Figure 1 (cartoon, rainbow, N blue to C red):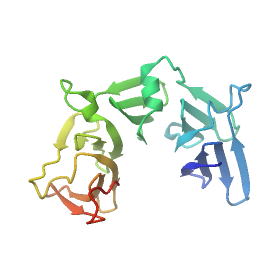
Figure 2 (figure 1 turned 90 degrees about the vertical axis):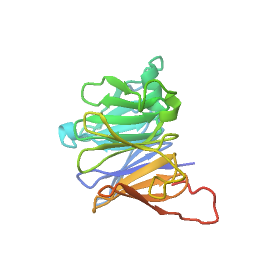
Figure 3 (figure 1 turned 90 degrees about the horizontal axis):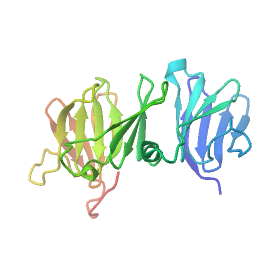
Figure 4 (figure 1 turned 120 degrees about the vertical axis):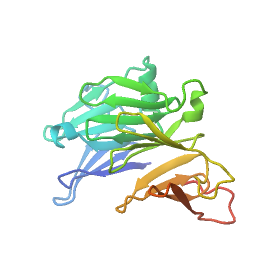
Length: 238
């Protein structure tokens, strides 16, 4: 059965749909659908049909599309339809961790960040090398700092939501600025230590989805406002 995993609208208004059966290109103006799939006899086809994330390539002003699949990264030339495969080496531990990531975030410099069980993996989409960052102190168990989600805010700060260690704030050079950890005695603190989603709204309020509630972070006053969705439930995964 067809399962829709990701949907992306590019700069030209084309809708791209990632699924478990490949990539679909939907031109709503012309009612045209194109289907891209893995072909074992074609090295210029997708490396696999399981499509996780889709991004415009900012380095060429959206002329190509980055495709994150279950086993590697592909680049699609939108005009020719030719697909180039990148970093599908099963013997490379960074490649394996990248492909099994919890979340992805592209930035304006052609960098694609991936959250893994050992922190953050930085992949340069233009020059192809991996760099691995352990989130949090190096002298502690790296599993405490599993990177579950990312956000780059309008001040170019880099936020990382972790599975066990709350919310981390970095500057654009990945220097740690602040760490927000769960403290059950602090009514203005983050609501839980598991952070699964992040969103910045038009008023620059940072919304933090945890395993307990939805938090609105007031950066000016350094406090979290809590919006528990179900008062009769122990956990509200967001």
